[in-house]
Length: 129
Image (cartoon, rainbow, N blue to C red):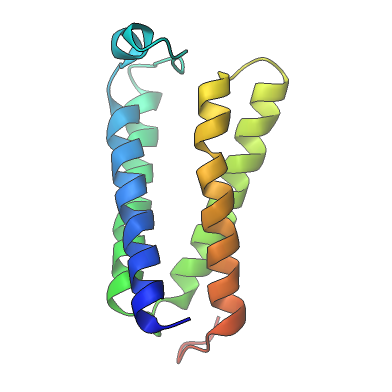
């Protein structure tokens, strides 16, 4: 794949994280209910903190989109973070502790995890991992 493809992919990962992070920071249960979607439980402390961390990861993916060669470590951490998010969320959903809408949302993280691993497997960087 070309640099342009990878830059666009990491930029889209950043945007995805920013949108999800902002939505986690605020109690959106009323909006979700009006759309017929089961919302994740909101906690006044943990939800904004989790949202901020998701936004911060988005900032890191943006950095990767700007310099593919020098930010491979970020891609490793991002792949692990996204894979962990999927495993933990789907496990919670299977136990009945997370709504199906959240389980479906993190399916996007499966795609990004695979793309991140593909990037790492096919691209050589100038930085040791």
